[in-house]
Length: 146
Image 1 (cartoon, rainbow, N blue to C red):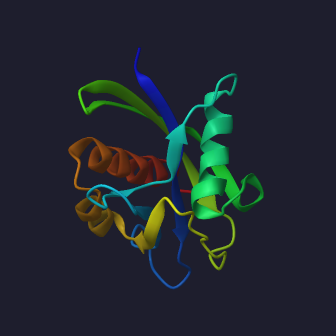
Image 2: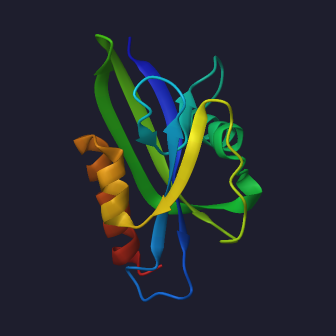
């Protein structure tokens, strides 16, 4: 059975820029391993549904709770890969930070965070499946003209 994790691609809109350059994505740098960059996500607890996991983990890892986020309808990406020889699946929803001035508060699992436009976010993300997910989020937002 695959290890399951859930999280959010969190973005904010900058009023000072013209779309689509007004979108920045939140990435967190892990404080362990190779210090990779990833959106907030984490493992599903027993009895917990996937969306609840995504909300809990985003609150724990970035200090952003459901009151600060607006979940975007119609976006859900599933990534499947192996970690140390074991299958893992990750579900990502898309959520907008309601107030761009809201502070990010990191947990001990992360040492840094960055708000990045799409191409920089993809460079930081390193993994093709996560890059594809970020690009899919961007396309979804452009198609919805949100």
